[in-house]
Length: 77
Image (cartoon, rainbow, N blue to C red):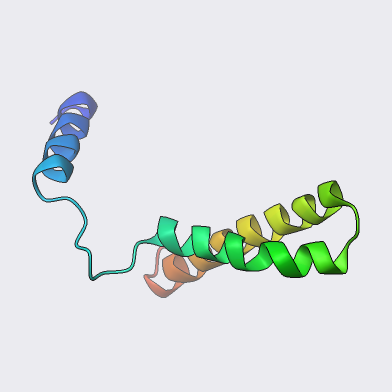
């Protein structure tokens, strides 16, 4: 199966089945983390730009660390 065929099959399956509502989705969790971190970062740092940069680093770092941990646990690293 070529890459294009795999991509089309994945798109078709996503359209037909979608994501179950009851299961947590990583993107939603990352969004919740970003929303949760915004207020503490703004309280900690007065500059909105610096607070945003800190929040971005924390969210991206957390997501990367979780991906690394899952791959490590799966034996892929």
